Image 1 (tube, rainbow, N blue to C red):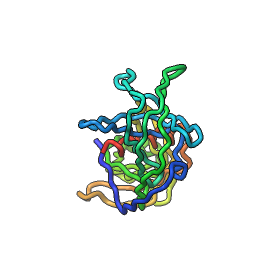
Image 2: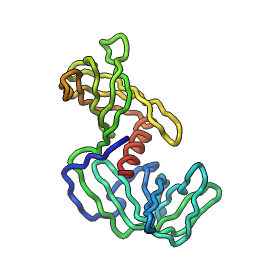
Image 3: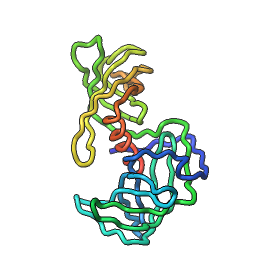
Length: 224
């Protein structure tokens, strides 16, 4: 459904605190088996510079078997950077809630992007401006944490106008409704010349929408 668009890469080495991960960010754990199994977890926190705490990997709502001492390649995204580091399972904790202690990495490899990480997709949405009586149906054709490119049959608003973009995304196995304030930054025609394409900048997104939206985008980036 989605495809990552990467441009202007610049690789560097840093430490984990400099990456400035957020609690709740999605991380990909890839093992070193021939099959390179990939699992997705969420960052819970840190124990100083001794360990990284993440949720326990699950599949079909069941805990996966994780062995103490097992090594993983950890990948994720933060702002306009992708990052990865190698980490070992220091301990597996099942009570009071299941989570893992991963070893704190000595260094992290990051790839700095010129623009916000963006995914391509076809997602039904609606756009509501103050001037329109009803929302206008449209399609999100690519999206980042900071904005989206939206295609519609008719104009959704004027350049610089404040609008509201509404759409649904699967979050933790459930459909979540997002209602995001945006500003129309550019307007053009689609490739066929039969519709309108608008570049939208998201702004003043509430945390309850921003965090799951960020995690949805980052997870899809990690899967490609």
